[in-house]
Image (cartoon, rainbow, N blue to C red; front, side):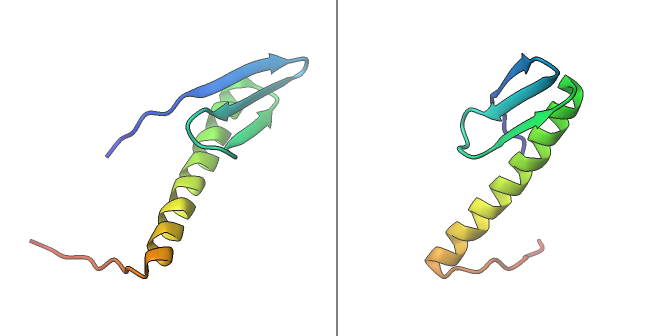
Length: 68
């Protein structure tokens, strides 16, 4: 499953800063636009996994693999 998110980015002096519009707390600062985009992807993946696990834990559900 691929989802798309919006990276809001800006060059600020010697730095590139940005955040993911849809997910609060996902923000980064890097020396190049390319590195900023990589960092945003990494932090977004971590935030999504954390939020997913937190939601599962809060509801006392577990996940089990099933093959068909």
